Length: 259
Ligand SMILES: Nc1ncnc2c1ncn2[C@@H]1O[C@H](COP(=O)(O)OP(=O)(O)OP(=O)(O)O)[C@@H](O)[C@H]1O
Ligand SMILES: [Mg+2]
Image (cartoon, rainbow, N blue to C red; front, side, top):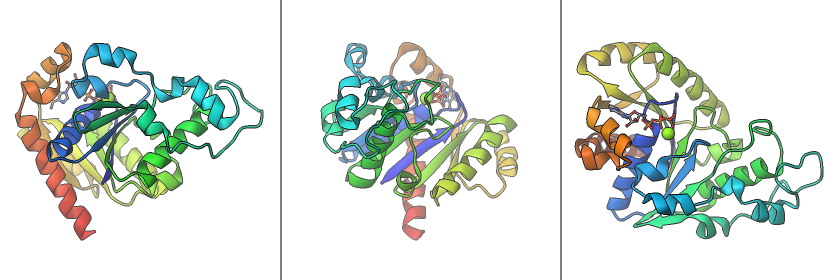
């Protein structure tokens, strides 16, 4: 099962991605928790101790390996480098293990180089492809709204994209944009989870979503914010989160089985 989580900034992507990873891991699966947001904080939400996170280097900063595998230094442009670097040994070398969870922090590519064919973005794309296409583990990808690092070939290996929205037109507008992008890339199964909702918000959200299928809701809960303030996993302060997210997981499995 490979699940990508996306959505507008601040809607709760990392909260949902961490809870999904936690649930699959608690069931005994090995889970690749992939932080594909350049502003990485999935590790914190998973409860990785701060000192371990400090020592964890993001993949995009591993200049030696990138240079060795692509044949060119990160930051260099225009020269020759491999478009198909070897990456199959990278996950084991670079992840941080926490119980059944393997955290991989992709890191960001210099804004000037983002989206370009530079060594570091080529390397990250190749790694992403490997994680999604070649690995057996459950993978949960915490993505930014731009779906950076997700090439066409990789996207076809993603079983489902969950787009997180919050009450309000802005994040739902972004959800429509992301859903279109995901479908264009070849992800057929795109679903929505509404976060931070009050019961009275649901009809309006449904209305704005139109054809996009809503598969779960998570109530607004100040304890989740408190968890973030104190750097604790969200479910430690609000165990109910796991109940809501396990509904999402079950709905997803049944929809994917049928699809
Ligand atoms: N249901 C909720 N109720 C109240 N606060 C929430 C809820 N879900 C998430 N939050 C809080 O909203 C903030 C943003 O959540 P989170 O970091 O998961 O979003 P994100 O989409 O990953 O953000 P970013 O775009 O910055 O990566 C956090 O402080 C989080 O604790
Ligand atoms: Mg996030």
